Image (tube, rainbow, N blue to C red; front, side, top):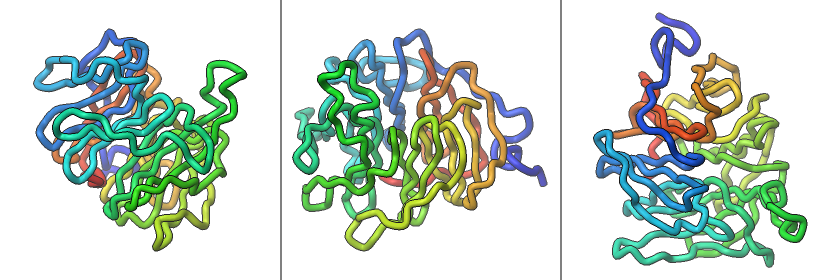
Length: 273
C-alpha cells in the first residue's frame, strides 16, 4: 500500500488545468446538477464551468469570494459586506450583513451545516483596502438555524477557509498564513475548545470522509491526517486560494491565481449539501 499522500492521489500527483486566463479565481463549489461555480473577483462575477466550457453565472457579484450550497441546492455566497443566498427564482436574500453590532467587511469563506447553520469567516481589518474600513470583526461567525448572526470565534488573526469534519462535530478554520485551528461544535452550534490542529500557511481547506484535511497553501494542496500529521503536498502551478470536491464529492477542484485546476483523489469528500 502506498504511504503518505500517494495513498490518496496516486504517485506523482499533478493537478490538471481545466480553465484559465481569469483575473483572480476563488470560492469553488460543485453543484449536484453537474457544474462547477467559482468567483472571478476582479471581474465582479461568478462563473460556471461544465464540460470544458465557461459561461457567466452571475454578473455584478458584489465582490463574491467563497461559495457553497445549502441542502436545497441554493447558492450561498460571501460577498462584500454580506453573506447571501440566491433563491430558486434568482432573487438574492441577505443572510447576514452585520454581526453583534458591526458591519461585515469582506466575508471570505463559508460552509453549510446539517442543522441549517452557516459558518463563515470575515477577516475584517486584515482585508480592508483603506484605514477608514479597518474596523471589521476578524472573526468566525454563525448564521443560526433561526436566522440570528453571532460571533463564535475571534481566535484567528485572519480567518479564511472553513470546513466541517465528516461527522459535523468539528469545525476547521484556516488562520491565513499562520496555522489551522479546530473547534468542537456545541449542541447550540457554538464553538468550544479551540486549538491549533496543524502548522501551515493555509488559505482554503476541505475535509474528506476519512477525516483528512486538504489545504490550499503555499506548497500547493497539502494533506493532513485526522491527527494533524502532514502526509504530503501536491504542487500547483499557481498559488492556490481554495478547493472544493467535484461531482459526487469525488476529485478536488482548485482555484489558484488566474486558473482552475483539478486533482484526482482516491477518497470521497465530506458532504455538506
